[in-house]
Length: 601
Picture 1 (tube, rainbow, N blue to C red):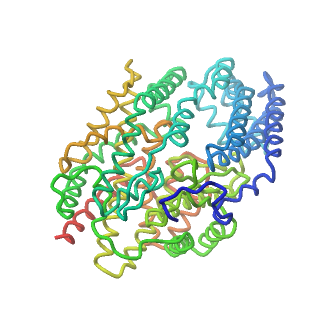
Picture 2: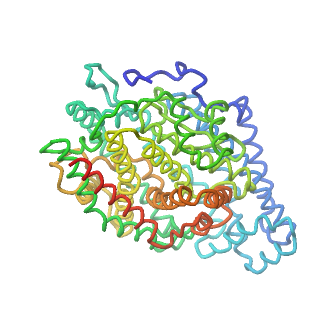
Picture 3: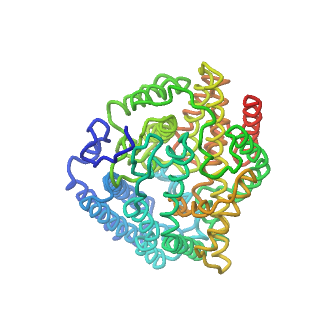
């Protein structure tokens, strides 16, 4: 797809749009489900004070809660995806807002559920489960709730927090409106002299240009917009962190980080070990940037030179169909069933919304509800990085597919910690496939460099983000405020530490933190790094052991939320409570940098 113009939504061919009509044939049905969900919540609310009177009451209450949540979830998922198609479409902006209001009402009505259960002794709830077979399915859920007793507020307090959910999410909504709708980056001239509209979707492509002036203009034009809105974005993020700190303190957690990790029983040591391990290997990354500087022949290398390929072999542009075929070939070790389901989903059932259009949400994601296809939002432009985006999001979607096929609704999702493993296993299989089948030294150099850059962006860069996030929350928890100047200075310091002294002074990179939407999902990004490490270990098993490793991995994909993430990953043969997976991945990265250095000499 050409990047010199941005099409309107109605100009995108239907075969490249996701088929959301499979979720709802009309928008009126969305409102029906929202109202049904509220009706379930109201029936549950009528049981207030009697949830744990008997095993029968407990079963009825859990069923009402989950059935209502399932309806609400499907409706808000649909409304959210419709909104993401075109953030300027007022019809779906209104439907999305309305669905979130229903979700807030549902949360308020059922907010007593957990606090009231926690008024009972754990042994009483266990006794009910033992006595009524229909409750067995909910054992893990109920025991998970009972284990959170010390961090759950009394019923009235939980109701207040639930009622404020829309307000508490305001910083994220404000940032999204600015970033995806109001913020326009203007136009620049590309290497062919063509005037091009700069967007979220083509920014990285511009940074890969052979023409250094194009890279520089794209870089400055893009980040100047964030500089111009620095105070607004700083204020939004400051209050997002304050919200998290306040809620964590109200729930008696020692820190926001502890609160974020507690729901999945992830030890804080996993987070800290990641930061420590990456810092240990930063000299290898510094070496890599010096290799780039030497090869590119740039005395005063800048951040806008980071993405420039060291070589430019032919054959790296793809149609969407060609990209899908390449992904399917790379995923052959996963077996015929896996690849046939995925190919049908992408090419026939229209799981993916493929191309960028005006006001479409930037980036990419895998989404959907328990009762829908595992949809993917893409912004495909046809380069190799876009192929990796397809295979990454396909990993998420196939994880959802197998989970929903094998688990009841109550365990039909998965934590972010495990989700990022599924996506990165796919990415790793693709790069290994490409390296195995490359036919020239130039292509090998390109792919090794590409693989290093994948490590850099997923393991190293996300760890830098994680360190920034940890610092930001600790600053607020210690009574500080996150001003624009403070955050810019800290981010600049971290960038210098992670990128080393191969670069000249840069006056724009300090604004990069302000464009990261994942910062509004507290302590989300570190899971990219841990997931990447676990995925490398799993992919190594699949490629060396074959079917036994694939069988273990498929069991993991089918497990959903039926246990805590650390335990689920053990099914696939990886223990993330140890430092070994991260250390092993970083060791692989270091070896590749050495190999690249030798090849380029």
